[in-house]
Amino acid sequence: MSLSHYLQTGIYLFAFLCVLFIPFPFIFFPFQETYTQFLFGDLIQVIAPIVGIEQVHSGISSDTTSLYILVLLLLILSAGLSVLFESSKRWEFHRGSILILLRKVFSYYLALQLLKYGVDKIFKAQFYLPEPNILYTPFGQLSKDILYWSTIGTSYLYNVITGCVEVLAALFVLFQRARVVGLLLSIGIMIHIVAINIGFDISVKLYSCFLLLLALIALSPQVSLFYQFFILQKPAALTVEASPFLFPHQAIIQRTLKLFIVGLFFLEAFYPYRQSKTFNDDLVARPFLHGAYQVQTTSRDSVMQNPFSSIKRFFIHRNGYIIFQDQADQTKDFKLQIDSTTHVFVLTDYTMHQTQIRYEYNKQDSLLTLHYKIQDKLYIIQGRALNWKSLPALKDEIHWTIESN
Amino acid sequence: MNTKFILAGIFACIGVFANGQTKLIAHKSHSGSTETFETALKNDFFDLESSNFGEVPFHKRPKHILDSVVFVSDTITVLVCSNKSNSPGNQSEKYAITLSNHPIVSKKHSKKKIKTFLQEEYNFQNSLDSVPFIEYKESTTKLPKNKKKEGSFSLISQNPNQTPFDNSKLLLVGLVGVFAVLAAFISLKWKQLRFWN
Image 1 (cartoon, rainbow over the protein chains, first blue to last red):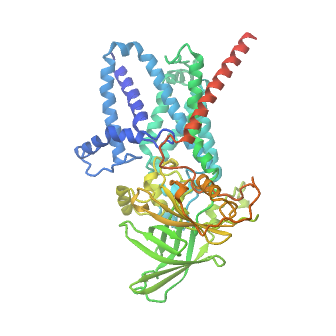
Image 2: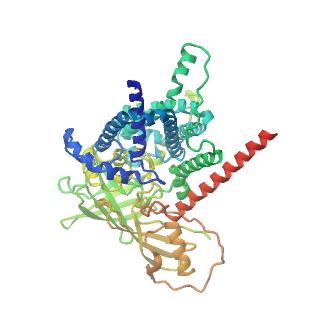
Image 3: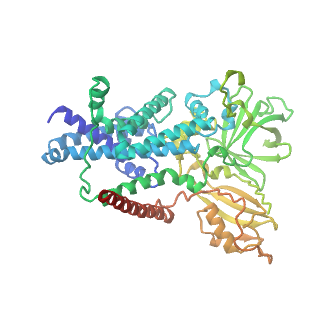
């Protein structure tokens, strides 16, 4: 056996093991995390100190050290399996068919991810409308990842278009006849995503590189033909791969299986939206008191006496947080629980310390007043709701000419 | 009927729909700092555990329990709820949802009808059979049957901590299976017909 065979088998097995064990949060297949944790969880904790990592987060999620260690383990495992398989005569006999089947698996997995991420974009759920606290934070103070996420979140049109392109690529990949076009499109999309994730330091670097690898593997049989056609400018015909050996003579079973898998993919992608009846996240009603508040008055004590006198604005986040912004634009966030029956905010900090603040809300004047007691002394912060939706960043305007700006 | 909903309480935490984001972006979206991210990640604080891979988290949501239903007046009803998440930051949050002039949740309807509606619309985790209805006395004025729901608002869209194969999901998978068989059969027959013609 040649070295290239070992290498090819190793790469295919590595990609397949990643498909199996990278714990992606699927709705209809939520078992990956459980069995990956069961099989590799302890091993990751043991290996981490050996490779010089002292503390590892127990959960395996995107771009965590544990995910990198998992991928390293899968790489070692696939190298071992590659040597084992390549020395087997049975493998040699079935090798071609198995690699075709694996390419099909990779194409389908890639299509599922493109479909899911594409639908998320179309329904404006991935890059959501920036929260008021982000909109009122100076540009330079935001890190690149939240800055990118928020910027993309301001344009509905861009999200819909990029989402449609991803869905289109997924559909092309799912159908044999259009697969090569779909894979070419997918490679373009994935290169762009990898560039964004690395360039803007978004923590989905490893997973996006993996999806790019899948697209490259699935397209690999056509590479020599592209070279012949585009570079040597000689006529070339695309390779038509024979169906793998699953039910080769039972067309009805094969077709049913394919339709069933494609149906499940659509279910996986659309189910959350059908359930929540939400098809544009920008228009979803925001929770009670959500928004930005400009501080009008605080208690008339000096700064030394009143710890809140430097607060410029405060924000209620849609996921249940309250954020205070001071004159120097420094922010402090707390988990927020609102008891509307007793008009009390319960603020929890990162040490799990809880503080109760009484609130009053005057709907007519959009005034939210917070009453905070420290050692029997009452402090008051009164904030007026800001019309954050009218900020220039959220105006969906298109100017075809510079004069119309 | 002019139906007006006053939504109070922290239904911010209920979240009709969670957004796609990474753990770091989820944390930064509420102005969380790098220092506090370490703490939040280590302890799976707040809603951090549900964010991953930049995808829309869906099945990891906290449990929402309906503790009681208080009928304050003929037009106002308060749902007293709690959120029993395993996440340390979300432990046993109490909150209330005030419904005003609700077409279903009022004294005009039977307990059974109200409970069925609440279970379907809000998808609470607990059995509503034992949930107390405080100050509830069925009104003699009944609304006509089959009246269309007005302004209904789904707060929780799916049961987050049930086993992955709850009945509705199984049914959907089954339907996809039936569709696949039928579509495969029809497409093959169609192909055969075209071949013979």
